[in-house]
Image (tube, rainbow, N blue to C red; front, side, top):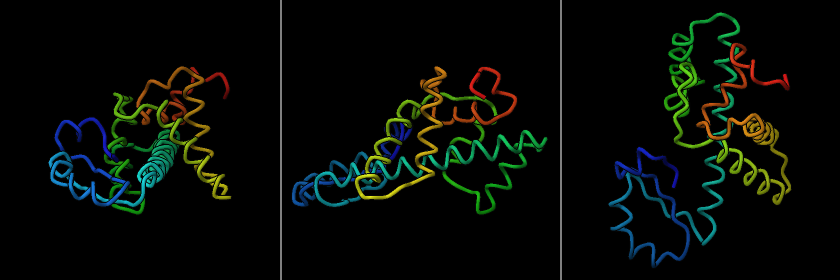
Length: 176
């Protein structure tokens, strides 16, 4: 599943299914009733790998957005304007839509906790190590979410990573 609480409530989940094809096809009608989009991704275990990669990219995007907005604030830019510009340029992303305003307004209601983001970041980096790859952005993102946990912020939504990057919010972070 690559969705969150609101999609689960609305029956608009994005489901990725791995395993044997025949049971998938047999259960397709039930799965379609729970989802907006349904995709068979391959053998057993493949869905877990795909999910790890989805979350890795999402978390890297989230941390990048927090840094962009944090730097914008430090430069004295209007963050509403900056988010509008981001939305019309190469900086646009689904994370901008779901987390940009929350970062700006410090509204970190939990849809996907920073604690879960840290866990998933480490799953992805372990997969990368197993494949003989070094993913510096994924490693840096994992470190940011680990830092949130160390500061007692792991219960915030992943958008709370902005608390580490906005200059006006770093007072509680004694490490910097």
